[in-house]
View (cartoon, rainbow, N blue to C red):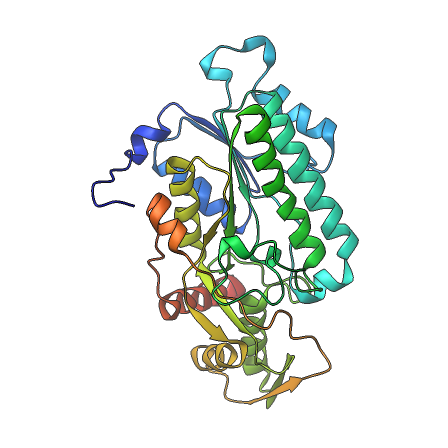
Length: 334
């Protein structure tokens, strides 16, 4: 971004816009929806999976028929101005290992078909949310967008990562052939209030918070963690991620992939020690090295996001982690 760069006003941008947010009732989606409403979006449409199974083409077509009927176009009040696609089949290493075909199929079908139908229905802009799992297993640190194709993803995440990565190919080809506007963003691992704390399907931070709090409540003298603790991860507070995605939706109009991250890297060992301290668990940490470590390191280069649409993360890891622990304590006691 040059020193003279000025951005459009967020409230002005969203005024009169009707937006579909898939996954809008989920962890990240709830923050996106809240921010869209605060910015003054005319209508935020959140399709629920019970009514619209987005892995099915007929359900996607029904979604557009219900909220953007062709018979009413060009009536502005029936037009969809943007689709933000957050819906995904997600989980931690264990869930990915147990369900590789499901993670591949569901994510591929949702993304490819929804993007295509959005194009056919004349939606002016599509925001595709990818994943850091799309990066090669041994990508140079920090991960730069230009290295995205220089190797195969880490095996336990590859089906999910590759399925999401196809939206990047689709975005670029539809722009090249049709001149259609879509963008592809690569958020790093998210955490924060409202996360999934189910030990079977959760990601690392909520899983470790729950393990520590439950072990403390039972009086256990130890907990067991997967791997050896050596891998590193970058984590982004969910509210910061939502802000980054909306800034890109407002300001970025190209199909080159863009990382959304915090640029803060921490080892899993240090992460668990920090979580134990914050939760008050004082027992022993035992590492089960028969379990996989996952990708050795994850840290993003976030220069593009800063330069192209002015995003930098605002929440420190210490503050974000404490808010997350406090939220889960409150949720567990309700």
